[in-house]
Length: 222
Image (cartoon, rainbow, N blue to C red; front, side, top):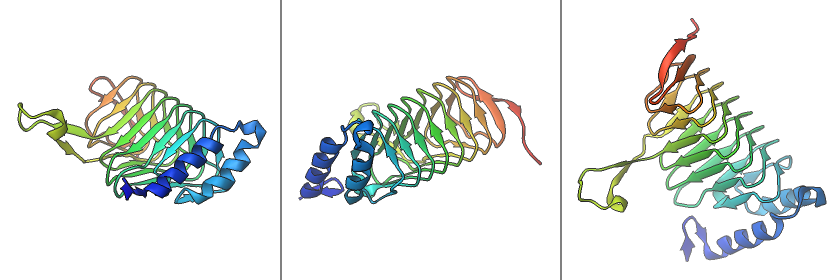
């Protein structure tokens, strides 16, 4: 029997090991124990990963975690579903309460040295790619899905979902409480002001702010 992308046995193994060893305090050899035990669960996980107690993982066979990644308390990474892939590259920092979820047939890719602040949501029905050296401020949301209401009488579960996805290119900074909506590409080196809602593509090297976000200054390089 299959449970999403896992057999029942694989799911039980994941539940038992993550619940048994995921709560051991870091200062009581929890880090070392998790690094050893989790190798049998994840698609790929490096020995140098720092995982604090109280981080949660689901669908681990779809998750890759590179070198020197830091994962703090209450982070949740959920790869359950069909044909999902979550790839967290070297040096990424996921602060407390970050929630990363792939819903189905979704790739979520976070490139090297990107910092994601507290209580950020990264939710993909469409693919999400976040580039190198980005900073995502606390309480931000990156949502790569949107209901399309073709019939006003349809129930919400039956409505179509768009899957355009989201791309955040290298060296972008997102302030506190920014929301990025489905289908958006944010160009390299852009800065998004706090509490902005980005619903359209942003050119490279732009400063933007507002609801909806608009370019207020361009520092486009030749």
